Image 1 (cartoon, helix red, strand yellow):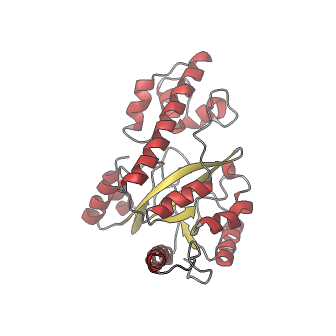
Image 2 (image 1 turned 180 degrees about the vertical axis):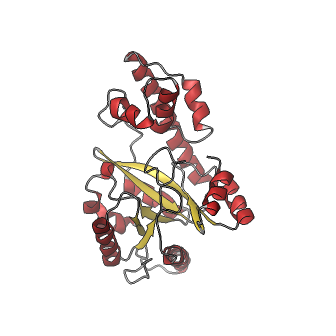
Image 3 (image 1 turned 60 degrees about the horizontal axis):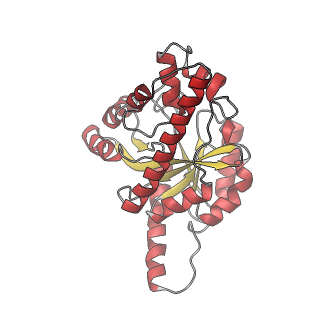
Length: 287
């Protein structure tokens, strides 16, 4: 969905604040910000970075970052190039399995976005090879599937640090997501690297899971965030925009954390004393 249309749809669904967090790209942010001013939606610039912990996939969100920073853009280009090479190899593996799909069509479906398995899955549906993207994942594209190819390896700590370098607020995405594995065991290590938030409100999270993540946020002084993880209604959670209620305090807490980090960095430039990453444990969280 084009960024401007996404913002318009959000407005139609009663969304007051929308963070655009595409995977490994911020190329839609400028259009979304302009559309937000046009449609009366507060748009937060963001990104979602895919990382790995062993055999598990972990996503790190970055909010309120300086998305036009050239060093950060070079980092994202490297990530996207790795995605493209990976996708091409998956297409070759599918062909070897007798399942042909056109690489050119996959690129058209991606429409400038970072190419990933969902685009291959949609191309497989169009080619009549499967009845749904979910079936494509179940048969060929899941992590142990015959056409699966690992991504360029990046740790969650690497992603957190990349986001911090451009003044952003790094947040652990959907920790209850099945592919994330035991990521909560790694939370203290991520916090030590500067993780500033945790996505508690999420379509696939049960009330018990939400309570667990909120308790962890309070323990570690993290901002509590949430969202629908909307991917156009056909992929990921497939939850409608605005269907997950997130307290408005979450946005205020993100902005407060960003201000604290800027102040800390300003202090670092004028003070030889050490600074703890991520702010203090007593900071307000978005409850």
